[in-house]
Image (cartoon, rainbow, N blue to C red; front, side):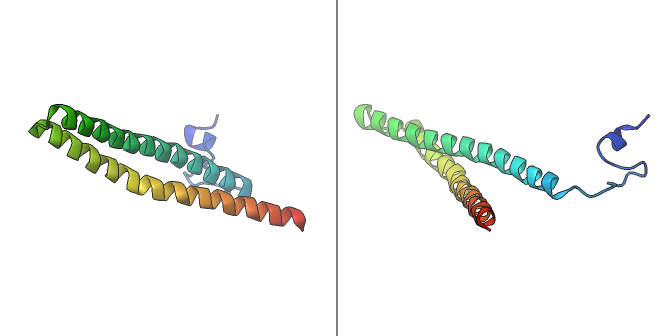
Length: 112
């Protein structure tokens, strides 16, 4: 009976055995990209939500007056929203560029 290491593709000595094929590597890249895409989407939604919260609280402050607590919450929402949005926007552009490059490579390969 094979042990747990062998069932994961590792040999009996703990080594990896045969290297993964190109299809397996490509599938791993696609899986990693899909996971990053979900994370960046969540980060962007959270960041934009914090911006919306700060805008709504600013309107509350204009209408009923600013308090130190309200001003602090607005500032924190803006800072945290910015810290979330900056890397997630860059990451989403990178993911879109990689997908576009793969589509172009597939189109070039199909015409040959």
